[in-house]
Every structure is written in structure tokens, then in C-alpha cells.
Image (cartoon, rainbow, N blue to C red; front, side):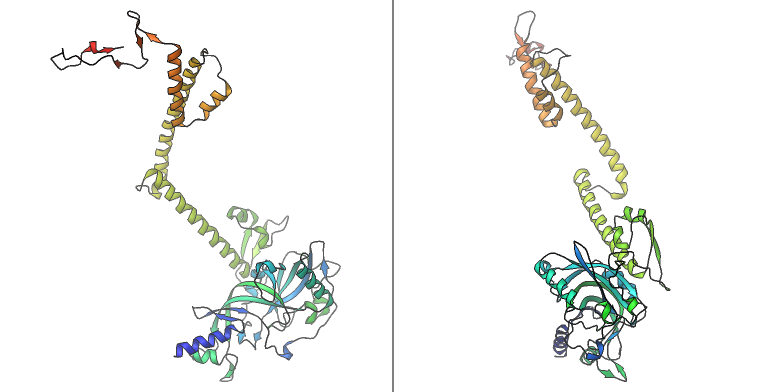
Length: 426
């Protein structure tokens, strides 16, 4: 009964865009806003201009803030959690109203950065809306008119409970309420990825708006201006105590990963990966090694088909040496058979040894496999024999070019049972 009630409660959370995974401490959140509080919505500040080119319309947004979302009971304010994940948002698809229909895509996130200069700090991004399709054009007009101003991200994260002493039923039923002078909430500890970002009427994060709607400093809105700030440029590196690593363009090429996703631009041969980029790098490498493992399994299966079940990976060099020896023998046999076929073809066509066969015949022999070239050899051998019949110099009887053939059946006169040479003709 308790399990059924808990399931009902978790289903109710889904209506708020909160999906709890089976493992119990991981969730996916769509930051919809159906219970937004008026004091969460900032007032517009500063001036704002927009960038566009022939292909697309660019507009900067706050995507997610390092704050406690009171209306969701989810806390993203733990130090470093949001900051380490910001690069995972780059390249994600833009949809309207969390409608994941692939035919309704609007564009993608072409730039993102973590901004600590504003209160609250958080992830900023530039949306690239492609100028194609009636819906895209209408949304661009909505941005230009100021009618559209909010976004919402889908984020998957690990969390810890603010009240570990509460059992699951108590925790989820009191989510967002004050228990023991502290709000019951999910405290995000690690962000795994961002599924998409949507244009919405209002987002659960009251700061997830156009940059001119909450920037405390009008000169820090990162909106479009004469310098084209919104166009894709190098993302500033995270500073602080995070563990960093270097990645060279050569290494990225050798590993087969897309260098542009990590911030490489023309002329840049080495970059520093912060914590967020390291997560992306680990995911890329894991994908590459999985594909490599699958190809290796296919290769082993192929080798077993050739060498049999006795094939061992650790003895690959030995098996390849054997395969090379077999190949050389087979290649020599094929070459000899082709040469024989050419010789008899020339005889059949009435050519001398130095004469040239017609190209169609020569090409057919040169390209034939073992089975075909053997048939061609026998065909031209028969034709040559028909043109140049062998006969006995004594009696004139026709002979075969085989080494020996039975001339007649024994008449039984040889009582010893041994082979009688008179029964054969050469």
C-alpha cells in the first residue's frame, strides 16, 4: 500500500516536470513554470540590441541560475555544481514549450559561458534561431517585439536529500515545505547533461530570461551590440580550484573527437579543459572506445571464420604470418594458372608466344578468380588441342596431351594380375 502511495506521489511530481529515476538519487527536470512566484521575476534593466545574419537570429539568455528553486524543491546553489556543467549545454537543440518533436526544432545553443559577475551567478548562453519556417520567423518576431523573453532547460542531475532522516514517503510528500527550520529539497550534487532548451512563456527559474531583463549592470548584459557579442566566439575559461587538463589539436584529431566542441578555433593548437569540458571529453572517449571494442569483436569473429575456433587474440601475429604464407602460395598458384591459360589461349587463337591476345580475352584472364581461370585454362587447352592434334609417329593414331591414358581394357591374358604396359598408349 505504501509503495502504491509513493508511486502516486512520484507521478504527481512528473506533472511538475520532475522525473525521478529508478536509482532513487537521480532526476531529470524540465523547468516548466506553472507555479511561478511574482517575487522571482526580475524587472527589465539596461538597453538591448540583437544580432542576426542571413542565416540566423542570435539572442543571449540566462539558461539556469545557481539558486534554490522554491517552487520545485530543487537546489542548484551548491558550490561548483552548475559551474562545472555549463559546456554540456552547448550544441543542444532549441524547441518550443518542451515539445520534443524533431520537426519543430528552432535552432541550437551556439555559445555558453558561466557568469559570476551577476547576482545570482549562473549559465548564460546564446541561442541561434535559424531563419527558416513559419514558426521560426514568428518566434524571431516575438523576440524583436519583446513578447518572448523566457527559456527553460531540461537537466539531468544527481542529488542528495536535505533531510536524510526522512523516509521516501515523508521526503517526497514534504518536498518544498519547511521541516525542522529547513526547507525539504533535492540538493543537486552533479549534473550529467542538458536534454534541450525551450522557448516558454515563463520558466521555473525566474532569472532564465533575456539578458536585458535581469542584468544588474547594463554594460554587462552581453547582448548584441556593434561588436557582435552574440556570434560564436571563444568561451572564457573557468577559473578557480577545479582540476584542469590540456588538450592539443593533434590529440583531438588522433582520438577522432570534434575539436570545435571544445573551443578550438583557427590557429589555436592547445586548450585547457575545465571540469565541465572534462565530463564531455570522458563521454567522447568512452563512446570512441566502445566503438573500438565492437570493431575488435567483429575482427576476432572474422579471424575465427578464417582460422577456426583455435584463433587467439594474443597469437594474432602468429596467425597473420600463417595467413601471409597461405596467401603467397595461393597467389603464386593463381599467377601460374593465369599464365598457363594465356599460353593456351594464344595457341587456340593461332598466335605465337610473343603475340598479343585481344584485350577482352587478356583482361578476362587477368581478372578471373581461381575457379574461373581454371575453367578458362581447360577451355583453351581443348581448343588448342583441336588446332594442333597430336598423333603417333608410327601408326598415326590421335593422342591426348595428358601424360598417359588407358588405350583399352585388359583382355585377361595377363594372368599375373600386374599392369601390362601394352594396355596403355602415350
